[in-house]
Image (cartoon, rainbow, N blue to C red; front, side, top):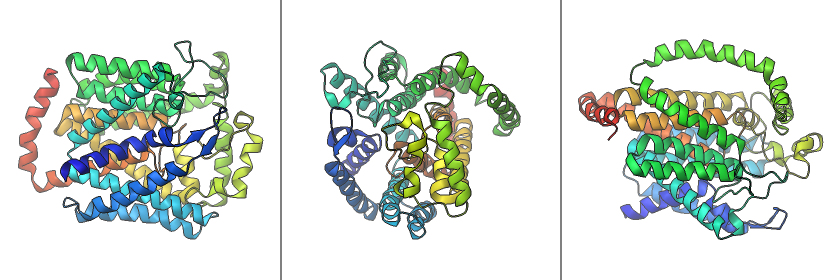
Length: 424
């Protein structure tokens, strides 16, 4: 029974990464969707199985499950005032199920096990994606509407992920986990696979994130055990505000100077539409996924030339999208979850397990860097949302356990730190 539950979680995570979309959705030569009925059925089946997993779980505790039901309930409840009630209800139920499965995974596995499960699934999908690309399987290739080559000079791939941008993002996520959790030759080989995959995918986002990971992870391993969270925030908050102000002034001329689109391929124009949508319904929002399933959501596609011949499905910004979907209340809830998860990961790395803690912290850093330009959360079937809530519930459970049994936590902390510092 335990092994079956483990395989369910592996398959579920792979599907949040896009594996079932790649395998089960049929596309025409131009990249348009021909049929996604089997893909939709696969998610229905996964959620039905998740109900059985939930009913047979012996690890869930009242506080996490109450939080999961409350957050999921808000998403589902938004159908009551949505401009597209049916879509909000269907996708809201899927999002609520996603949050519940994350809560179950966090209840049944330790943070160390969760981090390694994420790494294993990412590694398998990356290796499989490159292997299938080498033999020319069409499903793992990516059709770039702009005809851009990857950094290796060839056609980009997406592997078993939704598209090449997410492929690069997931490759960078795997990079930080491999750097923190693996050692020796195994780390070298897995890192090489992730970096090659990121270059092959050809997404500038993935390349920048993977490059940042190679620099930031060693710094984090060095500094996190030595700098208290309060001291770090006292430095980073004013520096971040100042850097943001400077970036706001030099953004357009800097990108124009290096020959890049200052609108980030239409994203900044699309964000302006998002701000207007938030202003129209600031409290309740338009309902989960409601805006782009309504007549109002068809308008931006007509005025953002970079999205010509492309049905815009979201605002390419996690915070704008959440505020449009669930109002400012939903946005504040998301920021609270993000803040708690990142802060708790930092404290976990300092007090309990440096290697795993820094890995989880760096996953959150990757998420936070990518979230202003990508729709990671709150999403109904996306690894970004699933991983965020898994780490949130896992760290919440760890903190509650530590509060009840501080002597056990203190005994486990010292060996973990020695392992991390020794590099073995």
